[in-house]
Image (cartoon, rainbow, N blue to C red; front, side, top):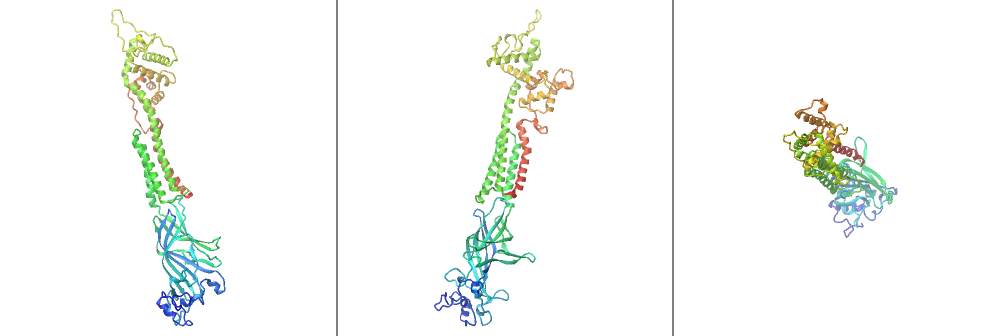
Length: 580
């Protein structure tokens, strides 16, 4: 017969010994693979149904039994599978007599009640040694394959079963929008290259499913198959789809491997660290706002850590043009961390403003109660009220400022040694004259003149009193005094202001009789005494949040709002994962 390797046209030396013996049998009495595929009786270019005269498409059953998932490459978007690919079809020309005396010497037991011929692998191949018709089935999305073993069996009725154990790597387009909660459907597409659906009809192997239903599937899993690879696991279910290629007219059998990602490692690796970083950023709001390095470091660490986690995610995934859930989640965390840093910048702005305003009052505190006593000495010397002395200084200092600014002419009295009154006595108006003692009595010496610093403090105090005495009653109540303190960067609650004024009245040696309402008001002297004392209001966090300094208000609001923002981010992103 043609196609043999021997000189006599006999079977090649590679044929099993039992079949070598069968070849010597009488051809009319027995049949071997070599005899069945002799060139005189068999044309491997012609498909079986054409020879039978039916000209119907030959039915080819394809199946791939997965033993193991070798790897899943996310960046290359491919999956490597190790398994057994089986091709089954019927070629009546290869039927033979398996009865005793026939080809029994070349037949061994197969499935119960059936016998078969073993075909050397060299004959079932698209090569020059090919001796039988072979359907040109291939995997359309195949990237690479490694054939490791093969076996071809022919049953007595001509059924051909070709099995190949091999490793295949197929292209698996993945959508990482919901990463790490994504589910991937990897297709394995079988089709014929040169044979259309009018010639070859690809079909699935029928397997028994749950109950009595029949499920048809190309790809199956062995009982001991390893269905995990890395952070993926493949569910033990497959779906299939029949389609026809518009260009070639060939049937395409597509099986989708449904894969789900193990979420827990990603929660530990990405989401839990992000939550811990958000807690660290939140803790920065409880750090003293005067300690800038600690506050800034906690915010910067949150920003850099989120950026590093984002880079780690991108390193495991291919470049994509669409949004990733995990990427958006981490970007929101970075924005929150940056907002915490901006919040501290706003705190610093308010803190500097408060410090600047407190510095003005600090100058008044430096003179202390001594200035009040000095004013009282001038008042006794001039026989005028405390307010008259201060108001006279205020008016002359106001005119002096206007002269410096070029808005008024120079006064007749000149400033000498910081005294706006000249020889008449510092602090007294031009109309006020000192009372002369009785004849023969020694005259009372005038008090020391005010220094430039003292004049500035008296002027500032009087100006504050006039500014915040809104009803021009000559007295400042609790609300007006509270506004004055806020002007200097001291933020007292209403209760604290009332207690401060009340304590001042209790410390007077000769407190004026009056109602409780009178004890909650200040004259100009009381204002100067309190402004000249050491003011340091306690930061009572239990009081109204809006009664604190703006710098502290920012932190107090951030402490309450930040957890809500983080919780809202987690909730919204958890609900939005279905839309990616």
